[in-house]
Image (cartoon, rainbow, N blue to C red):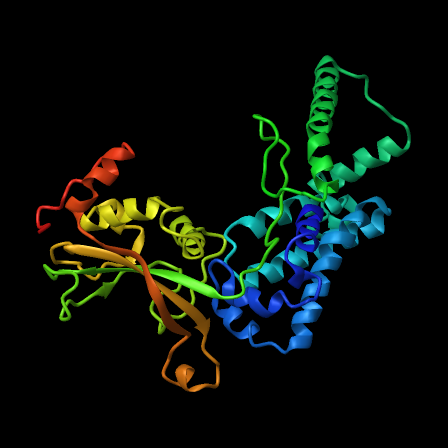
Length: 355
């Protein structure tokens, strides 16, 4: 959490002028329905959200060292924070995993109400062990216990040693996020949303059965992904803690170029061949029951949420989109042979009905 907070104040200036939340709900990787409404919150509420984020990520982590009550408060605040993030966006399993270490903030006394009190029950057994420990009654150490203690101490020393470059990175003005410093990958750096995109762009994959891609009468039909924005009339999805990795990668590709994301051309080749596995990753194949398209192209669009009380929302639109231009030009399967061969990719086998 501390790493996530530090990368923000060292990254995008909108975290310091408290305006990042003006954009986050609309431009996050995969928005959900609640994000649609939260995006229209008043400016003062977005400022409050940003300040609260700084408090929870930069100050609350130190509550762990301020005694039992503050440690429990830390656990409550962090879990509440993650629940709010789960409600407001599809950040896959990230927030659910972040809740797990916060559970360690609650000791037996804090969690006792969750367990029934009955003779020989788990709660009574733990209380008995605690009473014996308080009275100084210690069982004679066994060989297995000694071995486990040595292993625990050894692992503690290993983790502490591996944590040195992580702590140095946290203190550095050139902090790097989401990086591992050793091949074991036991201790890593973490950080999210160090910078916020101010507008949302999307890559829309389109296919046509027309022999001539440049013909004025060529009909281009959109492929729909399972969760990422596409059809302006489709409601944003709700999938957390599940993760559609392809949809997530399409978000990154949209603010880069296809040359930086060659995999998207690989995907286009699969769709041109009518590859069943690739099509299973999509929500809608416009050529279902027909021959695969002759051509596929990528179109670049700018997306923004419709105004809940506006005319577009009245038409059932969740999104308003405007074409920016081509993302990659129209391609045929035979045009990709050299491209695939140069990258040592196997050329997709055409579907029997492929033209």
